[in-house]
Image (cartoon, rainbow, N blue to C red; front, side, top):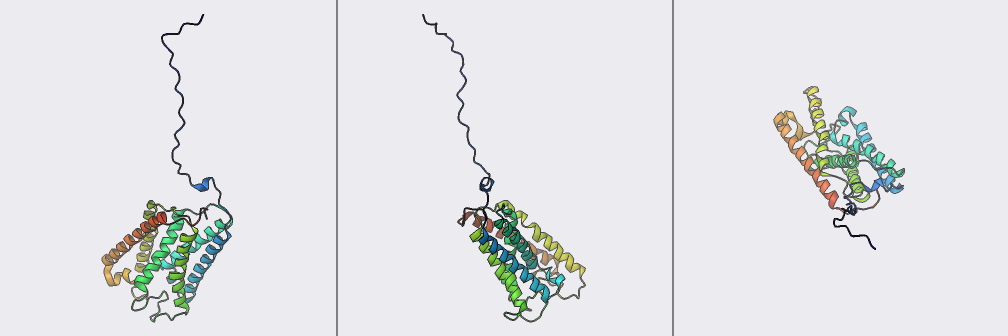
Length: 252
């Protein structure tokens, strides 16, 4: 005899479905440790040394207080420190610096270089961080310092970004935060000029930000245009970072 089949079958528990895996936003460095990269460390260390040398040469040629007030000098010092830290991390196989920091350092030296070559290199009277009224002679101290700050260092920073840094690390939201330092520099620039006597040579370091010649309205308008250009350049760098090929699969 077999047991009668019940008319009402009890509800059976549903067979659990396999979990849906969501796309992970964890970077590869969370599971793959960086490796020792001596060549990368050496390149970044040399770049930092050259940047410090350019600033040191300017300090020897002119007034330290005036020299350190230039945006190009400050941007070069920022890049030199970032390169030193990045070189140390590449040598000791540690996590790389935040792309927000390295991207900002790259942006600032590129902006300083573009401003120099587009607006300052051929001005009359000639642009000089020492306040000289004659054009710097080729291969002399002032000319050499200007080339280091506005040619050699920016090119080295771009090569490091293109050849030694993995792509797609920059994000659009960073471009707005990168404007904080230029804004702080503008405030410093105007306060410095206002604190100096009107007869002080080089009171305004940049001719397009000269309130004596353009008035504060014209100076602030030029600063606004420059800020928009910096923001646009930050967006452009970010876009290029997501379209350029990755030179290496390893974090350096």
